[in-house]
Amino acid sequence: MDNKFLKLGINTELVKVLERNRIIKPTPVQSRTIPQILNGKDVVVQAQTGTGKTLAFMLPIMQNIDTTKPEIKALIVAPTRELALQITREAKKLSEVNEAKILAAYGGKDVNSQIKKLKGNIDIVIGTPGRLLDHLRRGTINLGKLKYLVLDEADQMLHMGFLHDIEDIISKTPKDRNTMLFSATIPNGIRSLSKRYSKNPVQIEIESKNITIDKIEQIVVETTDRGKLDSLLESIEKYNPFLAIIFCRTKRRAKSLNENLQSKGYNSDEIHGDLSQAKRERVMKNFRNAKLQFLVATDVAARGIDINNITHVFNYDIPQDPESYIHRIGRTARAGEEGIAVTFVSPKDRIALNNIEKTIKTTIEKKKNDKENKKQKRSYKKEKNKNYKKNKSKGKYRKNKKSNKRR
View (cartoon, rainbow, N blue to C red):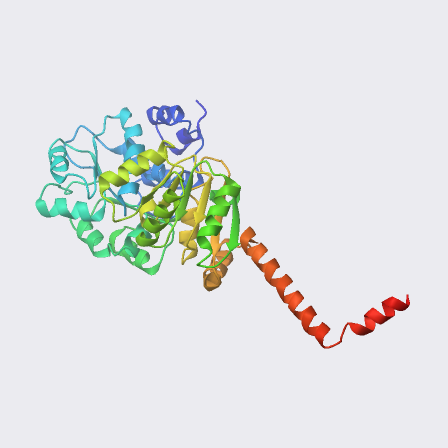
């Protein structure tokens, strides 16, 4: 069998599972990370969303754990419930080779059902910091014999204020564990965390050119805060997306925009931190099954959304940093497809847009919506007529009229 995953050291059983899921060729992050983890090395991996990080750590973990022992062997910590669920889905696909028992532990789900499952010899726990700490305080989870610890989207966890929670969780794990840290960016907080809790980690950086950003058509629509809704509606009519995510900066903005879209007959729903877990799961299931056309989301809620058929991303509010922009537009152009990302920019967003363009080393095409163009043309015509009347009253056109009569 000529499969490149085999050459990385992944066994035949797991490779067959990958092939059944049409995964044949490893991504750069997988090629560089998998051999290091299989060799027992700690790693610090800098890679953007959509690069295949989940399989980069899940394949070697699944291959190396001994499921005959009644203990938790691996813990994957993720910043959001959505990302924890996404990782869990990938892990369960691979678990058929060794019948590993997997638990997703996150807030909003009945804690008692999780406690019951933890009594049944769980092999891998995938969870969010808050719920994991809850289990540790209750004494319902034991990490004393943990072999693998993964911190996924580490920069986002720090940004969300989970540093102390993560340190509390790490303090309950053995010092001889393997530690894997995955992050889109490596700020000072991540470097400090790595120095304190990793053993001579291998540093792996996947350059942004490996992201599918090259397959995304990027457009900036210049508008105003007042004209933003009209600009969005016009773009929706123009591009007619199959599935689209519309990003807002705050929960309130997401809720308000979704209500506006629904009132105009659009098939949309919202996802943000104020929703119950049951509601969030229902919304995501509908979106994944294309029962929704538009998902209005905040950045945090959208972490971990990995759906292949998203054709468009609309940045209703421009993100404040380039990394968030890359994460957002990376929701489209999945699995080798192409996508379109439209960002609505008001005059006050100029600095943020300049920073994004510098980071991605691209000048994004600028457009104005049709209403703005028509408004500008009307304004220009009105000003021109006004100037003509003003000059005529001063006699500036009389000479020309006389000369025309002579001809």
